[in-house]
Length: 223
Image 1 (tube, one colour):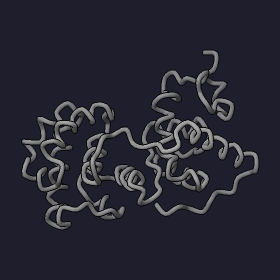
Image 2 (cartoon, helix red, strand yellow; image 1 turned 60 degrees about the horizontal axis):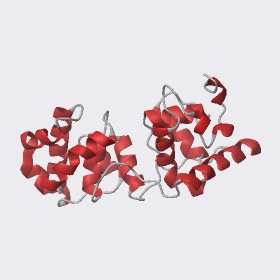
Image 3 (cartoon, one colour; image 1 turned 60 degrees about the vertical axis):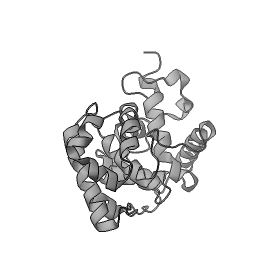
Image 4 (cartoon, one colour; image 1 turned 90 degrees about the vertical axis):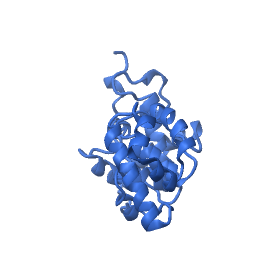
C-alpha cells in the first residue's frame, strides 16, 4: 500500500516507538524471510505455499521441489499431479497445487516466464493475495510493506502499536507509525519477535529486549 500520512503521536509515544525499533535493529540489522528461495519466482511460490503452514515445513518441501522445478515453465511441465507429491506434507496442498500451476501458466503465457513485480499484477495471480504480495515486494526491496500474519497481529496489539480488528486495519496503522528508517525491516522484526519471544501462549517476557517498552508486560510477568 502507499504509505499513509504519518500518524501524529505524542512525543513520549514517538520516542517509545523509535526506541523499540532501534532495539530490534541492534539485534538483527538486516532481517530476512526464513523461507528459502532462489529468485522472485521461487519466492512467490514459497510464500504462497506458506499459508497456514510453517516455514520449516515449506522449506523441507521446496528443497526437493525447486530442484525439479524452479521456473514457471518447469512448474507448468510438472503439472498439478506432478506437483502434489512434493508438497503433500503441507496443509491445503491440493488447492495450493492448483493455484501454483495456474499461476505458472499465466506467467508463461502473459509475462514470458517473468514475475511481474508490481502489486496489482502479483495479486491477480492465483493463490497470491495481499499478504503474499506484500511479503514478496518487501523482501525484494521493491515496496515497503508490512504483511500482517498472526504473529504481527498479536505483537502489534501487545506492544500497542496498532489496535485494528482486522489485518488490513493493523497494516494501515503500522504503516502510519513505524519510523521511516525502519519501515523496510519492521515486517520481519515483528514476525521474528512473535515467533520466538512474544509467543501466543507463553510469551518470554523475562528475556524480551523490549519488555520495558511493552504496555502488556504486566499481563504475563510473574505468571
